[in-house]
Length: 192
Image 1 (cartoon, helix red, strand yellow):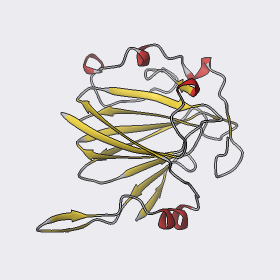
Image 2: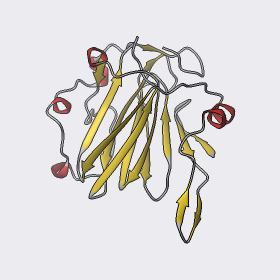
Image 3: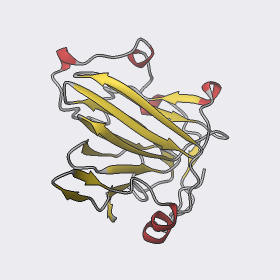
């Protein structure tokens, strides 16, 4: 696997080694030992999630607050998305900045986000099956979110605005400047 650093510390693009032939392909989508060796990050994932979405769906920007904050490793198994990570760790040199990467069934890329990162994605294909691993369990009382259209973030979701489909909940999130982030940037492992 290849690890590609991004402009936000410990937000990583992971490219697995894919073995293909006339029958199809095979790759390890996650190997805890290799992940730790190549990233320097020790993580134990405890929950796997999967969603199906259609073109134009935009989910995010979501995070879980401490003590149920989550690190995530996300990937696409069908279709393609623009995946976005926003640094919301107070004191981080990249606070309020975002990175985006296209994840698709064809490129097999994965995106790792530590605690303190708000996450969202927009669906670029007709349909997408999206999977993610989390290192803590979902806790609805701990949900947090930032508006997808926050003008200070200025994220290009690569969709026409009139084609964006949001959940009712995702229509009403505050801007980053209007929240008090529960995350502090402490070190390169981005502890909360």
